[in-house]
Image (cartoon, each protein chain N blue to C red):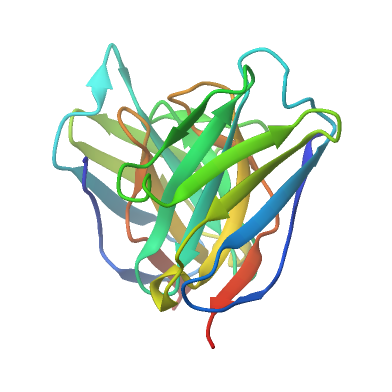
Length: 109
Length: 120
């Protein structure tokens, strides 16, 4: 089983500032591509995919969301955070049996 | 645009069987290279993949739940279903039905989720 760990558990930033969160897997999830996705879950809604293959934005996702990383270490960056970005963010590895991180909760300072 | 909708009892007694269905519209569960999963979200443990059924009707399960889980399909209704046997309070969660476009792929479409409580 691939264990996925996200840091920090929660994050508070001011509107317009940058938010950075991290995802670490206990084994590499890269094989020519990075088998990692990021999701946004707003309160009361299901998760929505933001990025896949670590850095490819899904259709309609604003370009202030970006992803990077390879192997076991990945980062989600939100540039110029907006009020609608308040949510919990999850990373998901699909290299092996699917597993998710525990989430990073983003709040506005 | 694909739409998934879970349905089933919101309350199940301990040791009984949890049964949920997912009705898919806007796509076919037999369309090539589609994979239909169940994922649950525990209040504390977070998101857990339960298993999937492929467009060919082949199921695959999370080893941690495999002994208690069955995922099946009804292609005439464009539905797939989950059965989880011998439930305990630890199975209390929000259950989502989800689509992926590869066996090892990200989940690109989710149902709204249905809350299931296991309690006597």
